[in-house]
Amino acid sequence: MKFLRTIAAGALGVAVAFGTGPVTAAAADTPVTLSGIVLGVGANESQRVLSWYSSANATEVVQVAPTDRVKHGQFPKNAQTFPATVTANSVNGGFNAHATLDGLRQHTAYSYRVGSGGSWSPVYTFKTQDFRGDFDFLFFGDPQIGSSGNAAKDGAGWADTLNVALGANPNAELLVSGGDQVESANTETQWDAFLAPDKLRQYPWAATIGNHDVGGKAYEQHFWTPNTDRSSAFYNGDPNVRSGGDYWYMYKGVLFIDLNSNAYATGADEAHIGYVTDVVKKEGRKAKYTVLVYHHSIYSPADHANDADNQKRRQDFPTAFSNLGVDLVLQGHDHSYSRSYVIKNGKKANPAEQPGATQVSQGPGGVIYVTANSASGSKYYDLTDPDPTKDPNYGPDPLNPDNHWANSVENQEHVRTYVKVGVRDDKLVVQNLRSGTCAAPNAAVELGKVSWCGPDSGATPAQPVGSTVDKVVIHSYRGHGGGGSPEPGKPCWLEQPATGPGRTITALN
Image 1 (cartoon, rainbow, N blue to C red):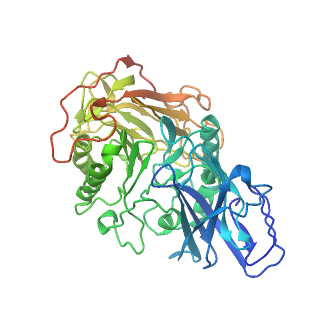
Image 2: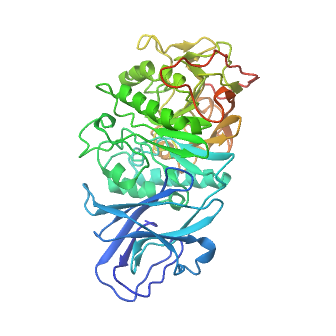
């Protein structure tokens, strides 16, 4: 893989190449393998976290300098170093390392490498933007490398989505995960394919744990996340052999809270709500918006719509999220796209809001829920008809009976997509964009896992890469603007129904 290098420890006179070029050393001791380097989100906009695998239990660091001071791969003598924590891998042998880069300056390009002495990775770069104001981030659903049965094809689709998304949005500031990075939790060949794109060393990946990641320790070993609570309530099994934890970070006035939704039994929904409540109480007044991220979509449009765990969460989560002033919830798991109406306390806030409305006013306590489609093309789930016999509280939408009542838009075309979120002072802009067509790379289509491809169940030709599946402008209720939400335990804001002044029905079937 491009990101994996075997390099000589203790060597002098190392020639380090940018990107994927070779690394050579004048002398060689025991070869050291550095792999799986991934740039992660930090606790705030002035931090980044780097994680990687190493074959040696050695003292390792991240060396960082402004890019304009790194000449021909050589770092200046006063380059800053950040020490890494190195721990033995509990699966697959070797060691994992992570380091937090702190004190970064805004609007600066940085170059970095990981290692020590004469044993270094290639040099990679990232850039910071202004630490205040508007920004865009990208949300990706279920790459799940290996789920098609062909990890190479899945990896190709994943890499292409990243290239398309970041080619169209080069100034996007975060890459947010919907979970299920891989099919099998501890299969490192799948992790290799997931981590292969260099974009994951250039833009911070905000990891989310999915049900396919949770069954081993590789997820935690590959991703170090900030402000993480690893209490037993946030694991759905033995923490010694499974991954878990809830975490949060603040980025440019947005409070992101990421939950391990695999842990829901024996009161864990109550534990998650308690975690969100505590974070919002402590940090929410500094925030302009609050965004929750977790894997299991409670308003699933497809195969997981009536799973027992989702039925439970549909009862547990929505009123709590409304009371806590959550603005947007990003979810995965169902390998199809949906965007909810404005939901307040588990009900449609404004019964008159139309399907596919392109503009909505959130109102106090109003929450939008988004489910992301597959970003890799490894697996798609077809939309399902609402079935109130399985869950009487999740029946059809009176305005569009083909959809579940909570969802303004449901879409499946068997093409790769990603979600772009624009954060503005008085609104959020959510777009679902096509990153592929029916052509390769699209493993589920290539391998015959699905029988059709394109809009309208394949009756309409595939639309071009970059075209829009769905777009909505969410006008913020500024009663809690400037940060904050109601203090937990106190009444929510006065009722102000959401409206949908613009109405366009987009890809509803």
